[in-house]
Image 1 (spheres, rainbow, N blue to C red):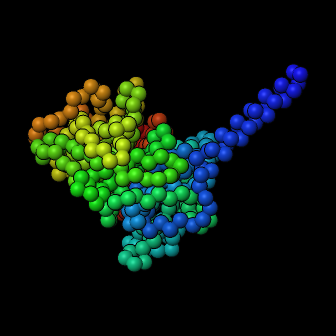
Image 2: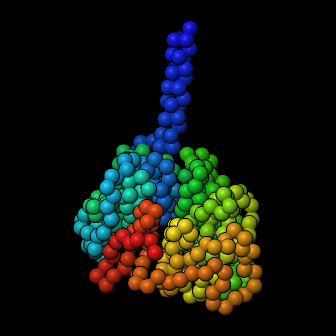
Image 3: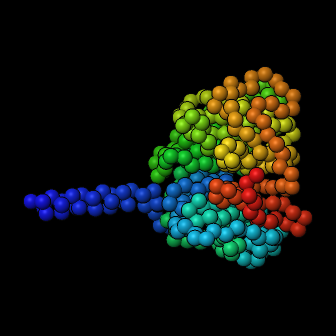
Length: 355
């Protein structure tokens, strides 16, 4: 009897394990060739799945990179003139290449870049992998496992999808729609099913002294505040606004909390959260104001900026000296970040200690 019960128990465990494996997110993807028209914003989800924003099609693609193995011993990716080396790998001149975004696979530490190969009618979307030794290769898109989600009412062009983030089984998508309240944050369950029209988001812009509904989120990150996932979104000129993910419901119109004004005449390019010496910070790359280290102290209780301000207000920050021309930032691990930097000779991929 005990033997029978043990066998039944073992069978039950194997069934549960098999069911868990079958329900793995990567198993929702089907083999084929995704028709990605333009590779823009990137982010990683579970199982080494890379999400790609196709700004031309107004769609999201989920790609199985096959990159599921942790890299032992680490390594600090560093490639000078990476644009020229990618172009050489793809068989084109560097002038025919545009690098759009950077993401790091948290499992392996390998870097992925979305690029445009060629210009005009000949342009082609390409995903490039750079491993921790600096080796460059193209991620083949033929007969790859993938999923696809079309965004209803997406605007045309680059602002249709401006930034992506993944948290707790949901893909968060920022961009503009064709609706009157144009600025959108969409919370899409993954594996993909039906995609709703998302939540319309409104912000108070302290430097402009008014509420805005048409300004797109330029970049965002997911950050837990008091145990709740929040979108921390950067806008042009440069308000930093938080939105609880739980409020991103279809058809809702929500007003974010402006927790900082980081200076006008500036566009935030990328943002990552990290912990240093027991305190949390945000590292924000900008096109005019360098790389900012923003303290999150007081973020949970900040009431928000609701009146016109000149210059800066809210969360405190410092500008990191020596980091110039930074276009993209991605965390490599708890202590390091990978940067894409514009230099006189082209683009460099480099790894730094988080400041």
